Length: 203
Image (cartoon, rainbow, N blue to C red; front, side, top):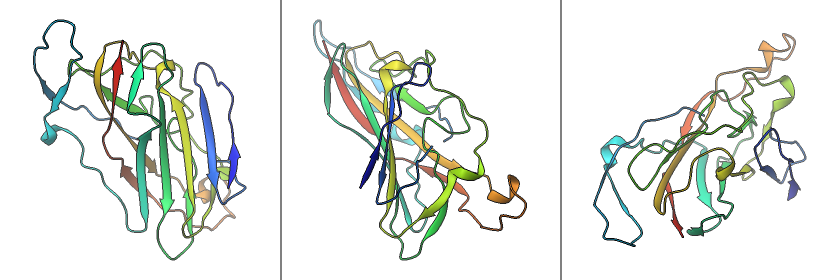
């Protein structure tokens, strides 16, 4: 496993891990909804999600795309580290666009529902790169994965104590030939929605 760390870009703290590969890796929003209960004084709020309003995690044959946190409980002032992982679980190598959130095509790379059942405000920080380059495409071998870690507190208002729900996606609509007409390789195209992951913030 080769481990590569990307320093702060604007306000984002991001690190990139590449599993079994030497290339460097360099995503659509949703509006969710949930029901909440009124908490008793001095208690941590919890959420009862309205699951029908959440995106259903989607995976393409041969891929998994997952979202995880390094801890289930954080405290005010902690870094909150989200990790997304794209893995080739097929028996064939696949050409992929290696850009993972937050280096995608969209401004809102993660959607976060706070303990009030509201979409957490985006406060800036992730660099919005509109188009990939030819160098962003590489072969993901069977069993190989790429991942990206981000501190969400740099870019989202995560100040309320309670339980948060988070979702993101990976997408590609580009081919290498768009950047180099002589490059005839064919990359996987489509969108993968991640699972909905949770964490709790305590005082």
